[in-house]
Length: 154
Image 1 (cartoon, rainbow, N blue to C red):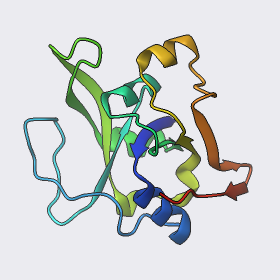
Image 2 (image 1 turned 180 degrees about the vertical axis):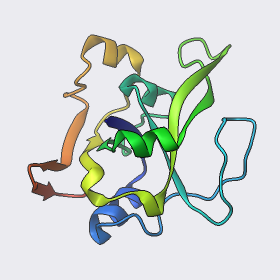
Image 3 (image 1 turned 120 degrees about the vertical axis):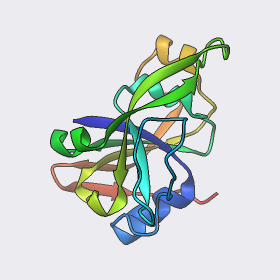
Image 4 (image 1 turned 45 degrees about the horizontal axis):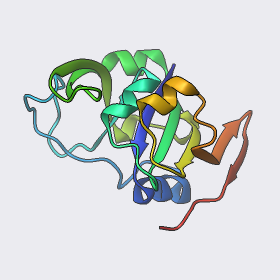
């Protein structure tokens, strides 16, 4: 099932260079900002089920939108909700479906596409064109084992 993530250049450079998820992600303690339970000393990456949920994170120029195709069972095992400030009004908090997956459980084959954000984007840009093609540059794609990369430097 396809899921989405916003990441910084350091993260995607490590993943593509090493072709694994070692030394990426963060350790977390259970908090009130989401419903996930975290294991100590385990690094996690968070993913959104809905593509438009990426707008709960900052979709600024210089970051990346990553599309993953992760087995449904793995996603189901790490399902939860995050509490995010509404990106239209900033006055309310929304309960958003997300997944917190331990990085040792991720495989490079799950990473399907990485797109560089060339210009700041917001939800109105997505509503106008949900491909966001004029804002993004594909730098990595995994289609039938054909891969290409051109990772940008900062």
